[in-house]
Image (cartoon, rainbow, N blue to C red; front, side):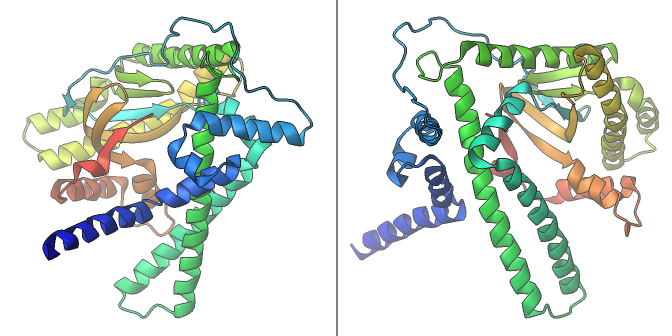
Length: 359
């Protein structure tokens, strides 16, 4: 009986420790604080009620009457999804896949709402500033440890304080994201009291139109499309960009690791140059510079298993390019990418670390 009791205690404690590690309680507390709801409602009620409560609270401050009753004449029918290109379900091991992301009208539409209710622009700028400080101090501490020197107590305290502030602002940002996504969903739900058919429909249609414009441009450039969803395109560069390294590899003058390194490097260089062309094309077609495509990452190898479900090894611009443009950097981008690939090859991977489930 003692062993059973010990197991039950450990099992209960592990659950609480997991909640603390993932900041679940803190996340929910911030969500509750923003919408003036109880912590119980945050856990056990859907997000729609929180959005209604938030809008109601804001309306009262502005001396506006806000009705939360559902309209009697509910629209019927299913509206088309936002995705454009269905994924090709396979494992891509031949060429790297580059991810190009465009902040859609859906995201742009949320910004005034966020600024109106939470002053989230200040949250975002503060988080970015704290993130830079956290990274800089982290590098100083790491380099000090590598040299075998003692880290001062004041530096440790400063780093801990910045980490705390950064995590707190990140909690706010995650809570805002919950409301942004829920607001858009409720605007497109015919049973919702804040149902706005025109807003939801036009936002989705405009996003699809813009993504199709980019896809059309990329197809003309002989790029392959692996998947397109809402505001992202997963592309494979044309074989012509890899002709030289293919030829060298076919003559057995390159090891596979070096061949992969070269392909990732080529993909990054190509997309960096092509991004400006894409944005110029978007500006001509949309007659505004409001929408821009942003390079996000390179995935290689990568496996697509369904809509919004894929996993792969990512080579982010931040990880590789930041070192490449560092004023103190003495290595070429080829060497940086090569080390990253070597790290990927030798690391024991936990699939839960890099499975991506976009929502």
